[in-house]
Image (cartoon, rainbow, N blue to C red; front, side, top):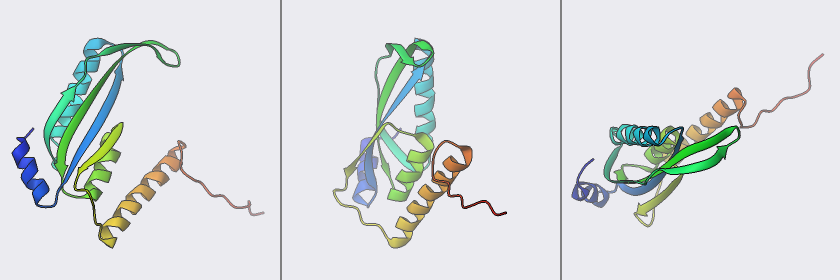
Length: 146
């Protein structure tokens, strides 16, 4: 983690200030805490961001959190960081899967067409990966040729 004034300086030079929340479900109280701390460490090591704030909730015991799971342990975290571009945010979201995202600053973003196309292509590639693995996306099939 860095000091907030370093992130503030990045935002003054055009970077984006972001808040994200993460949730995790584990089989034990200790594992929930351990996995969340490891996950946040991995996020903090990501070279695209300058994380300056993180908060981790207490672990909560959850009855029947999933089908065929009688007990689970839930933990949540919030982080704030500066990141250089909107494209980097999209890549970061795909990689780390936050539960919620909020852009804190600036109030208005402008994208160059090339950056917008890059983002759309990233999303398109992801949808094709989902479709190929059978978990979503759109597959189009024509008539079987005889």
